[in-house]
Image (cartoon, rainbow, N blue to C red; front, top):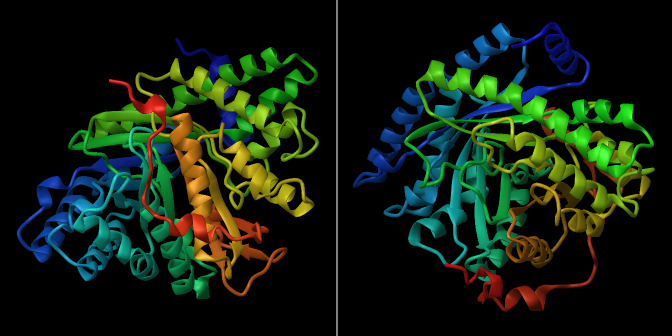
Amino acid sequence: MIDSKSIFETNQMIEKEKLDIRTITMGISLLDCISSTQEETREKVYNKVVDSAKDLVETARQIEIEYGVPIINTRISITPVAMLVQNGTVADAVEMAKTLDRAAVTVGVNFIGGFSALVQKGFTVGDRNLIAAIPEALDVTERVCSSVNVGDTRSGINMDAVKWMGEIIQETAKRTADRDGIGCAKLVVFANAVEDNPFMAGAFHGVGEAEKVIHVGISGPGVIKCALEKVKGEPMDEVAQTIKKMAFKITRAGQLVANEAAKRLGVPFGIIDLSLAPTPAKGDSVARILEEIGLEMVGTHGTTMALAMLNDAVKKGGIMASSHVGGLSGAFIPVSEDEGMIAAVKAGAINIEKLEAMTCVCSVGLDMIAVPGDTPATTLAAMIADEAAIGVINHKTTAVRVIPVFGKQVGDEVHFGGLLGSAPIMKVNKFSSADLINRGGRMPAPVHSFKN
């Protein structure tokens, strides 16, 4: 039974502590759209996306009004597009991106994810078409998001794909240089990518998913921060227990919204992604949670331990509050999207190397990091290789979303606006990784991958 105390507490979390539903994401399988010609495939894709998601935005708006829980984004994830352009060309892949963008505009969603390829062991024709099309596709579309999975624990790391993605990121940055490389903010390179992620830019609808599904991503850094203010000086196990309790409450709100959305849309419920996803707004920062735990500023010694404890406690609390928890659940540490992270970079408290260490225990990886536009493609690829290695060896999802900004140097700042925020340009190691990256081939899977 819901009592008045619970209602008051939830209102407090929404009104003063920035609790929100970050996204309701509808996953849609497009495998049945594959036809003998690319023109016919595109027509079927457009019609299916529009027909499936035509009520998504309005349904989210109604739930938001009725329950008083802010729903920030509505999104769509689709079957990896590389599977749809096997009998096409690079130009066909670009046209597919335009079709998806048009469909997203028609139904009114913020983003559509799944301009994706899974190449951890090698490339198909469709994979090559898709990857080659990424720079132009992200230049000429507004709402399309792209991802490429270059490694997993079972397969190892496709180093040819790693090298190519360094070049693709650089080319995407050049094509969107007049917009500070914004195309790269819609592109993420993964290891151990998951099929049910509702968050952009890495969302795609995996082949193991149902025909259609509703995933919900929730966020509440401010709620956790406020709860921890009440346990100052208490032992670390009390801190963890406090986080678990709040994560449970946050997840229950997400489960309520997910159930309602699934019922009203007539689509099965998939998962709740319990992620502490920050925004540039004050009071909505993962970095400030870590500082509340006891750091003078995020990035100092002890940061990785505090983040590990936070991530684990969030998962332990959330998993008891939902029938299905999945996606990337945990804590995100995107630089440009977190005002506390931005402050730490400006103060010199954190650098890319420390961020890399933190990715060993966070939800994803090096996220929304702006670097100088003249950063070599091989250096970008080496950053991807390092993150992929962390993911493959530790059997976790890792990713890189790095943005080379032409015309900017270390210490300058770039402004993307909205949830993407702003970021100081960060220093990159000046020594070359070119010989390593140019070897190509495939890094073998780790010994602990041989389980059957």
